[in-house]
Length: 149
Image (cartoon, rainbow, N blue to C red):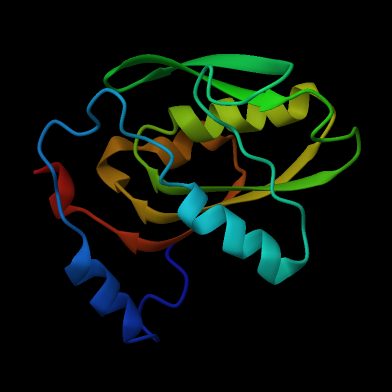
């Protein structure tokens, strides 16, 4: 559920700034989650570990393939970026069908991390991505029902 949705007037301002771009994402446009993940990591005193699309990270990586509403994709993470037993918060800009968040959780859990919860700026509830998270806590700022119409 959205956090502070009815209490914080800034959320209305955020929602009115969201722009729907037909047929997005387009090839080659990505990495919006970095905008939110880095400052959150800094604010909570955690390290930031980027999970990127193929061939965006230098060095040795591990990967996780997944299915999206518009095709197949893959996430990569540096080998050794996360140690077994470390706790992780997965942050992204948007949850639609949940494919990207599930792939991120799978990738982190494969190396022994404990995914504690997830956070997104926008949720498209009609696409039911939350249901794919197997009960993992998900915090969102804005639920966009009209984005799918």
